[in-house]
Structure formats: C-alpha cells, structure tokens
Length: 175
Image (cartoon, rainbow, N blue to C red; front, side):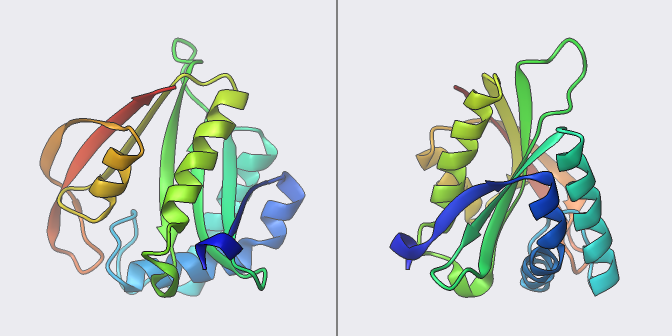
C-alpha cells in the first residue's frame, strides 16, 4: 500500500475542500487513543472547526498542510508545519498533528509524511524543526529513524483522550 500512497502539500483552496476528509482522520485517531489535543468524545463539529482553522492558517501562509492519499484518493494521513514563529525564530518551524488512520498504519505512511515535511521546511527556509509526542508511544521510533534528536520528557504534560495523564517527549531536528 505504501507505494500507492502519494504525499502532497495543499494550497489554501484545496485545504478548505479537504476539511471533511481531514475531520474523519482526526476523529479516527482520537477514537483510537491518540493524544493530539482533543478529548473524547470528539464531536464532528469540533473536528471540522479545527480543520477550518488550519485551512485559514494555510491561507495566511502560517502553516503548511500535507496529506497522504491512498491509491483511491482517500486521505489516510496528514501532518502540519507551523511556520508562524516569533520574530527571533524565522528559521524554525513546529511539526504538528502527525495523523495516520488506524486502518492505514504500519505501512510507511508516517515515514513518507515526515520525509516530505522536511522537504517543505527546507523550501520554506526553515533549518530547525521541533515536535512533541506521547512518551513511550509508537511515534518515538518513527522520529528516531527519521533523524530527530530527543531532548527530554515532561511527565503528566497532557491528557490522553480518555482523561488519563501522559508524559510528553520533545524532539528537534536540524535540516
């Protein structure tokens, strides 16, 4: 399946048209236990509002939005590059909301998304990337294989969708 997956960056108009499909991905991931800023139950309206806000950020060139599409054109994954940084950090961006549908996991999609997000960051003149993830989660292996450097952990930093505390691990990458 990974060979059939295409990763691409969305422009502002396309981001708006993909809000429904992106909401499906978000709801699937949160229902699967992903700690990505949302709690259960995640309403469809809340998910749609989130993606509308992301689309607005894309229109303002504050965010790059990437999607992974399967061979049938269905969005099965996404990641964002938050480029809106303080004046003294024009070289930095945050990688956020790495999401892959549960049905499409372990097929190399996240790895493809991370490769393309690096390319987009370079094209945008970014040389330092940062991200955070659940401590002990599957994503830690992905980031290590992709060349990210672990900075450290903060216990009880966030909540899982079910309300349980989770630690967060911070990473950086120089491009």
